[in-house]
Length: 239
Image (cartoon, rainbow, N blue to C red):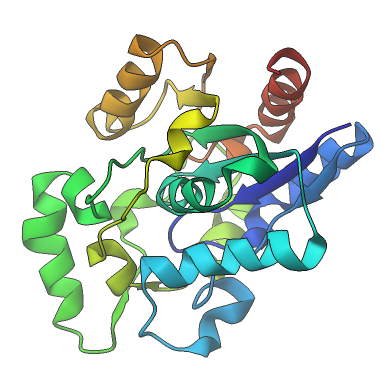
């Protein structure tokens, strides 16, 4: 049995990982899927929320649940969050898993890791709304041919605008994270392979445990069974 904490990506919430969490629990794992402040069922909590607030959200789960020997997973934007968490409490982690996620270095913000159009066009446009939130871009919606229309519609309807400050706040690392084993799961059918491709390449170059799944970016939504199998395999094969 393993202890999993899975951190969702932008615009989402812990709710989107429920299908995978259920499957992992059926395999006798303990699973926590916290929702970050300002998103999901916590969307009402305000817009002045930065990356450090999201890191604190997850650190609080570790503290109040008294979690140790954890496999900490981050999907997409969640890679920013879990990197900050891991650097703060490496002694509580067994493995850090990036699920088609951003892998930042010290001093980098999410906007630094996104395509140039995002930082130069989409982000300033969202800021022009004046509410501190970035609506879910249609370009990032799950491809129509990957899941049923019902599942896709339900998923999109539950996304919420993402706090913009989390995209501009740089991550500051002490270097403690470098003591941890890390793994990467790559979605090979991603619509824009250039976004996550460099992080997958880094993982392979540095010899991290590496897995691939033949889905678009939202692996947990498109193929929860295979996503579960990969996480279960990492739990059993990586010390």
